[in-house]
Image 1 (cartoon, rainbow over the protein chains, first blue to last red):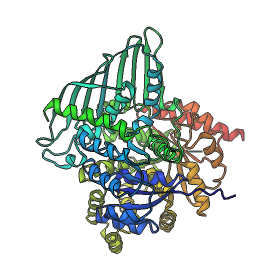
Image 2 (cartoon, rainbow over the protein chains, first blue to last red; image 1 turned 180 degrees about the vertical axis):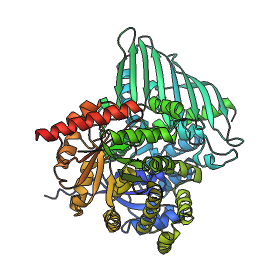
Image 3 (cartoon, helix red, strand yellow; image 1 turned 180 degrees about the horizontal axis):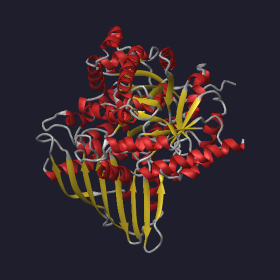
Image 4 (cartoon, helix red, strand yellow; image 1 turned 120 degrees about the vertical axis):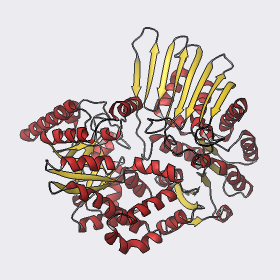
Length: 333
Length: 300
């Protein structure tokens, strides 16, 4: 009996930091063959050609259509997602698509992409990797088990120092699509994962680097059950060695605080409970960056093999883009 | 078991708590190089024999001060990934970063050693790029280390090691080993995938006795991927290698005595690296570890 299973042929579009990370992790999975890279930058393309002798390297997306691909990973800057995904879908380059968050730059484009995808078969996923963090998973489990009773309010934050000491007038941040999409989308996705649905009630967005550059945002939300939320997002905050994300959630029974490193639960006068990553079995098959990236990629490949819907599909990512558009509208951006 | 003092606290790193790392930045932003150097010196005087550090302006300044009075072995990790990720943000991505680093190397004082590799750099040959970069980093370390400090090993940072492992770049790692051996420096690899590394190196016929491996080993299995058990099993295959246990306190989750209790029972671990941020930690931790390991040796 032939037990050899055909490997999934994967292409990675965009050989930046995230492209290299996903390519590396995918190559450790026995079900995957790295078949092609697509990269516009001549230096990176030259480097890839010399380094990966058996992998097809091109600068033209259309050239991937003859590569008999099963999966495409799109890891380019956010503003380029829409045209790239549209080409992949219209040219039938592959039936399974992973794209780094956000799905596109705006809700309208994301809706179009999702609609086109629903006309086809395959699995899609948007890279909201925080859902695969052991601490945020633990928080979700506690919330699903009604540990806090009826939810009353929450505070969410996403901070980084990425552009804290970048000179004013710099255009570097623009390439990343703005603080809401680049940084805020993660915590908005987590909030939607936890609380299902939210509506923006007020919002303000500030620029620091250049006129019209969205560098920090504060906005308020309300859920159908009355749970009120406040979000604070900034990539010009000093003192953050790495980007940080977190939520503090208050319910009728107590308070839950969750961030990348730990989860804290305070229920009335009971002793405080705290779980660190070390307590939550954080090991993975291959660790590169954070463990959540490996879990995310393994999950997506599993979904393709088993024809199931991914944890963070285009459909669920649409809600993030809708909310971010609402923030921009309310803030008059 | 030899003890090394690590540099994580000098870079405001805490894998246990982001809040603690931030507090360190606020509280210790004024921590002078001299104070950090005193911590390293105290660690060396209470049992540590070497300093394991990512090559950065901060650690080179510490090293310059320490090596004036202390004899020590150096374990240099390159590149200092955090600084390069920050630079990539500022230069608009990896290609921008690569160009900046190449420019920096070209204008460094070691141009004579680097010049023969120019063609390979222009051709984007990863092998040549890596060697050129390593020459540059070695020259930075040697420029400040004086005669008291011996550069024992240069270790590839986990991001580079693990990416090369994942992408099956055996030719690159083998070439790096040969290159450093010729310079009488032990080729080293920092990894958070110890089992995967051991399996791949066996498959690629890499001689363990020639290399240094640094990987997490701690009682709770933190960052011992894919599992604590598999990493312990893999340890049995690396007789002759220099194995440095890191994250032995599981990022501050364990006490030094708990760490020592576990490390003592592991085969083939030759070194332990621990970072310290306060003078009391430095003296207590290294004294305790030295006593624990000495006791275990005498009982053998």
